[in-house]
Image: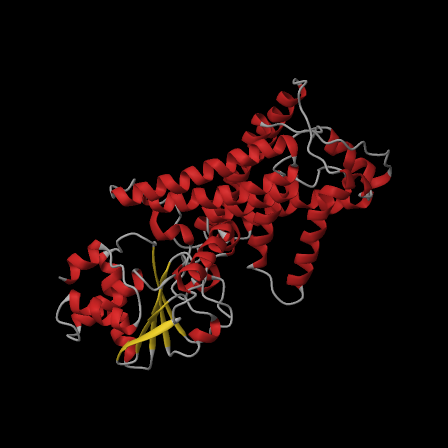
Amino acid sequence: MPTDPEASQSAATIAAEPYSRVVVRAALWLAFLAPFFYLTYGFANWLASRRDDVGSIVFSWEHNIPFVAWTIVPYWSINLFYGLSLLLNDNRQGVDRLAGRFLTAQIVAVTCFILFPLTATFVRPQTTGLPGFMFAVLGGFDKPFNQAPSLHIALLVIIWDHWRHRLGGFLLPLWHGWCFLIGASVLTTWQHHFIDIPTGALLGFFALWLFPRSGELPFSGTRLTSDAKARRLALFYALGAIVALAGAALGAFFFAVALVLLWPALALAIVAFAYAGAGAKVFQKSADGSITLASRILLLPYRLGARTNIWAWTRHLSPQVAVADGVFLGRFPTASEANSFGTVIDLAAELGRPAGATCRWISLPMVDLLPPPVMTQQQAADALESARRHGTVLVCCALGFQRSAGVVAEWLVATGRAKTLALAREMLTTAGRPVHLAEATERAAS
């Protein structure tokens, strides 16, 4: 099974720095983040307390959740791990990216608290001892507002992910267990309602996606595309995101479950960002075909749609067809299909390597329906010729109609197996695959 690309890219990360520099950087961030948290969080609470129209979203079954006083201890422990996480880094870039995640969660959550305040409906019983003291301290600054998305859960997702990459052996399952207690404690301390949890988790994964542990930032170097087709596709997905978001907003007043539309809304917005100019990097796919956890979670609704689209277009076609000299062209394979080839050259930016695929996997991500970057297509054609010498090769994208067909067509022309692109297209069609080559491919190969 492929590894997490954030771990597999360790060779490309910045070398470890003197730890004193890391500590200084972490201290500077803490000096900013701590007061920023209390000021913005308290301000949102204060604004909500001055309104008389603050409602709540609560399921009737939530009133059966028991109050467990001692769970205030794991609830409070997140504050300790917050500070320690900034110190647990090898270099200043690691500190900066973690701080970026914290800051993202804070800004988005507080914005939601101000625009759409909610209140908790629980009335906690009187508590004594250490739990009573900790609840008293909590009540000193935390009013029954600032509910969805739960900032506590968002920060938990970020901190959990940060430490899981650094712990091993028996400490790792202990860490998972403690994080589960922290997550459950938002309910058992009667601090949050259920709807706050999935929305908080979604925010946490968004922060992880926005500031990945390694590799390019999704927004780095992004410029608005000048390609008319890309702009149309960006607008299409953006409108889909707006419709889903509107449905979520309307649903919040009638059925809390409608808030699940926030997930596809965010996924569609990210895809729109890819077409608007960010490109394939928003899918966070590595050279071995694996995808970051945050990308897998956030873009799951879109990927489910992509899988459905693959089935609809290719269910009556052969999964792969032979082209020439051990080279095959096809749709995105299952693990068993992939393992029947020596090498898979994968061009689908949006789909991750299937679990259980053990063959050699070369991923050169391209965005669907757009002309591929010339250098990427040439690199893929060169990789195809090199891989062919070591066994059979499957070249795939989502459907096997355009991105992969373009690479195989370029390889056929470049290696003299077809004199022209027209003949290469005819070879692919004869092999039994519909072909829709991008204009850029036709110009490059002509």
